[in-house]
Every structure is written in structure tokens, then in C-alpha cells.
Image (tube, rainbow, N blue to C red; front, side, top):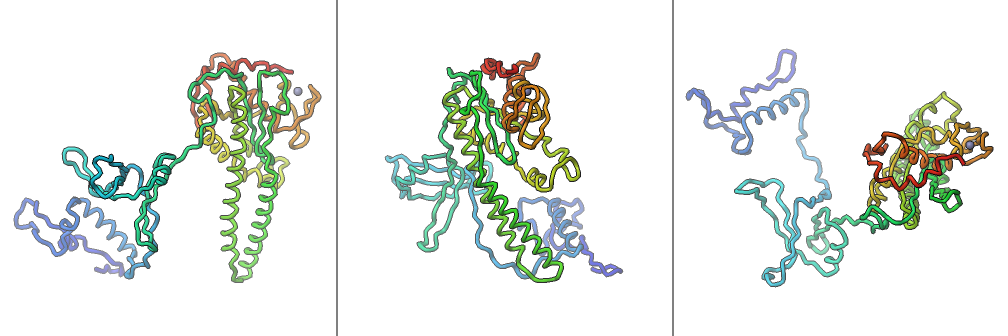
Length: 434
Ligand SMILES: [Zn+2]
């Protein structure tokens, strides 16, 4: 039907006459028992209202100009379809009852056919498996997470692929019993831009030695990162020039490829770095009753925007590309997966930690970026090192505050009772000026 303006309107009443029966009407004369295209027959579990709702949406789309394509798009290759562990059972029949073809069976639940008899009932597709001893050993390595059915065309066989979640071996001994006989220690970690992380271990000893200071440094990464950044900017400039002059080019395609490669390289470096940190924490944990405190650089980007302060363009770029949040969450996850108790890794706000002297606690200025000079002690320190030491000190000072019973993780918002940290009170000599 067309209106006066030439727009297409669909008559909804006519559609009803074609598709919907009305056998429940009060007046017998107005009932419609049979229709040419009965929707109720096609979808017996849908209600009358649902049909009308769906139809209204379809009609609206049609009136607004949407036309489904007459020819179907070419068929794509089947997508990887993982079946969640809730949807299948893997069973092993005992040897006596083994009168069927195979001992191992996998039953996959049908996602559509679920109904109630007396209890909930699912229909399953039971598949026999040819499981060798190698497969059985592999399955015992972890927890089965999901399953995938694949057809191997070359041998015309069906294969079942199981995906396992394998946890790394636990490397921290005191995860089960909370107490230990080892001396307490607090490891403060400060994340930085040029140096990814600096750690300072505060132990019952009264002096810091080189054993307790750790720089996690990836010199190679800075170089590789810089090289990629140069390549990107060069290509982008070239692409923009070509766009302006109307030239045809394929630089964007190459840029996309380069970005993907950069992401992969970056990821591998981050994981390498995390592994490095976790390994040293593991060695410390064998010697001490260890608590790890990491600073969260929340307001670090504030006041360093364009035109503010003395920051250069290159520094700003580095600052905003610095993914400390990712590093923090990965570190946390890696430690907890290896059996580190959640209250032992704590993330606190690092505000003010890099602008105070870590020896006397007085506020000091930073003459050069990366160095701190304290006029009261007449000492010059590395600023990240001071930051790490101050983060550990900030955590310790929290324990001695009056009327405070919990400490909050800045990252996850979890609250931990201070009773977990009573051992750390033995480290109070680090709070006094030395
Ligand atoms: Zn000082």
C-alpha cells in the first residue's frame, strides 16, 4: 500500500488475516479457524502477543527502507565452536560393565531440547571416544574447560579437542597455613616509565644492601618500542600526504599489519617482565615472611597535559602509553595463581611517595628528573628507589595509625583486616629517620 506522499505502508490487519488464527474470540462469527500461513503451526511455543511484537518490528524496519538481500551471501567456513564444560559430561565406564564399544564416552547436551518430566531433563548426544593412555595422562594435567568437535577431512574422522586449564605449580610454601617462622619483610614496588619497576625489600636488618634492591630493567624493550614508534609516525605521515594528493596507496594495510605485530611483541615483553618479577618474589618468599606492596600511580597524568608544566611532547607520549594498570593486574593474577595469599599482595595509592625523602621523611624537591636530593640529609637518591622505599614505609605507617582496623586495596577495593599484618609491626624501625 502506498500513501499520498509515495511512502510504503504495510496493512497490519491484512497481515493478521494471512498469518494468525483467532479461535478464542467470544463472537463465533468473527473467529478465524484457518489461515494460509499459520505461524502457530510453525512455532507452537510462541504466544499471539509475541508474534505481533516481532511482526511490528519487522514491519517498521521494512517501512524504513530495510530490504533483506534476495541472494544469500556466500557460505563461510564454519567457526570454531567451543562447548562449555556445563554442557557436556565425560564418563569412564568401569571395566566389568564394559559391554559396549568404548570405555570412554562424552555426552553433549542439546541446548534447545530441555523440558521437565519430574526433574529437569536434557537430551544428550553420546559419543564414544577412542582414548589412549597418552590422552588419559594429558587430561589429568588440569581441569577440563571446554570441548570442540572437529572433522578431519584428510582421514574423514571426527576428533574431540579438550581445552584444559593448567595452573602453574605453587611456589609459595605458606599459602595454606598463614603463619610461618620466617622473619617478616615488606617488598615495596614502584612502577616507572623508563625503568618498569624498582623493588626495595625492608627486612628486620637495619641497613639496605644491594641484595634488597632490585631493578627490573628491560633495556631492549625501550629500544624496540622506540623503533616501532618511529616507523608508525613515518608511515602515517606518508599516508596522510598521499591522501592529500589523491594518490592511491596501501599504507593503511601495512600499518594494520605492523600494529598487530607490535601488539604481539609488546605482550611477550610484558609477560617476560612479569615472570621476572614473580621469580624474584619467589626467591624472597623462601627467606622471609613476605608481603608485597605496589604503588598505584593514579594522578600521575594530572598536571602534565599539553601546555602545562615543563613536560615535552615525547615525555607526554610515553606517559600516556604507559599501561601500569595492565602490569598491575597481570602481576596480581600471576602471584595469586601461584598460591600467594590475596592479602599478601597489596596495591596502595602512591601519592606523595616520590616527593619525600625516604630517610628522614621530609618533603624535598626534584632538581633533575630521576634524581632526588635531600638538603637535610645531604644525600642524592634515585627517585624510583625512593618511591619504592616510601611505598613500603607508607604501608608500615598505616599499621600504626590509631583506630584503623582495615587496609583497602586500591585496585580491587578489597578490605583486609590489620590482624593479617601484625608480624610487620616488627619492622617499625624503618619509619624512624635514620
Ligand atoms: Zn632526608
